[in-house]
Amino acid sequence: MAHPPDSRFPVAVLVSGSGSNLQAILDAAADPSYGAEIVTVISDRPGVRALDRAAAAGIPGAVVAWKGSTDRASFSAAVCDAAEAYGAEALILAGFMRILAPNAIARFPNRILNTHPALLPAFPGAHAIPEAIAHGVKLTGVTIHFVDEEVDHGPIIRQVAVPVEPGDTEATLQARIQAEEHRVYPEVIDAFARRRLEVAGRSVTWKEPV
Ligand code: GRF
Image 1 (cartoon, rainbow, N blue to C red):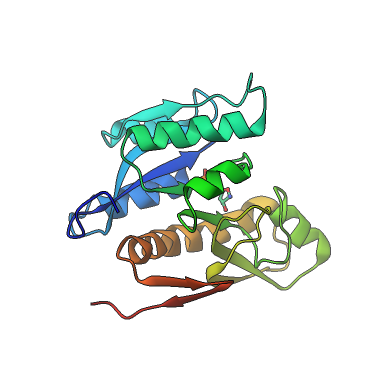
Image 2: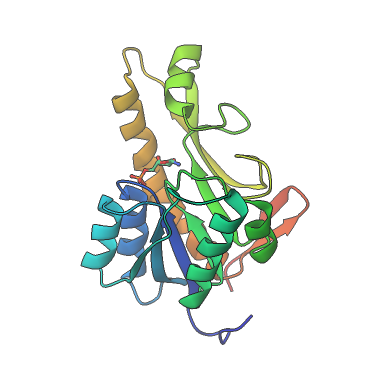
């Protein structure tokens, strides 16, 4: 590890849109005792609200445009290059709507985290919330996981169940899910940054705080 063990763990947050999860992480990281430092926020498109949130917090933003990319591998390499240019040692996906190619996973093995708005392996993909409503499930939730070469598949770090209420719309269910994400994702990132997560195959265990 490049940075001294007693310093904050440098991470890049990857976004594509509103950035409400980014905001929750920024707010947590405003506490100097938080384990991770956000060194940059990278978007796959310009003009998103998440970049405004980064700027307001004084965090440098970068755009690695997907549009115009010749292929997923070169796009993924460019994202990793941008993150490493700021000293990031992990990638935190927060509403990032692109699939990273295997070259990114190889550069950040068990160092890429994602939050998904369902209880994986149920409802992977980009439409988890409407699919959960359409299926009529009574419980859905949040899954925070490491990213591997398959979509929404890597080792699960933490899950929180969220009830689906009668009459829920996509918007009302998303609001309930995101409230949980905003609470739990910053906690997981802090534990990861403090090296409290141990990964063995698909199993992730939490070590006690030291
Ligand atoms: C989150 O709900 C996350 O689960 C999904 O995308 C959403 C992003 O929202 N992957 P935001 O940009 O953090 O507001």
